[in-house]
Amino acid sequence: PSPKSCQPNGANEEALRCEIEELKQRDLALDQEIAQLLSEGYSLEELEKHISLLHEYNEIKDAGQMLLGKLAVIRGVTTKQLYPEYDLELSD
Image 1 (cartoon, rainbow, N blue to C red):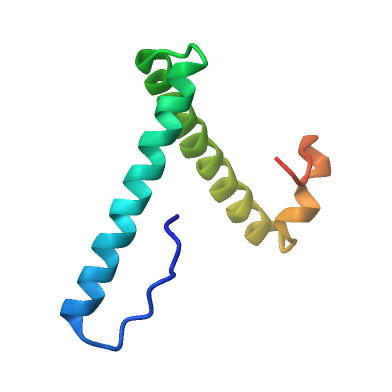
Image 2 (image 1 turned 180 degrees about the horizontal axis):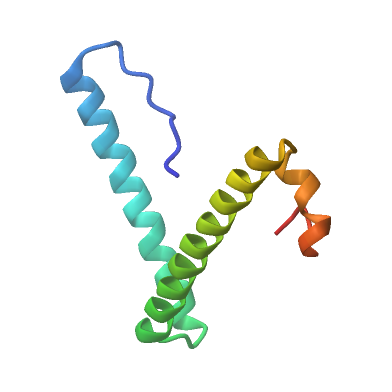
């Protein structure tokens, strides 16, 4: 998530300039992170595969959370109350 350091005065053009600057800063920071990882011996292919797997994991986790939520509604309990039944930790 990008930092919200700019506080535009309501003008759309100024808000867009601010957002563009924040995106440029984020792009630079990401380029620096990539350069750091490459210098540590990681390959771009390895990083892309890792990112892809993280996206897949997050999608599966979101689906699981959605199902737990629906089950909790059906049972009239909170999702937190279902965690022990399925051997889940709150950090899962």
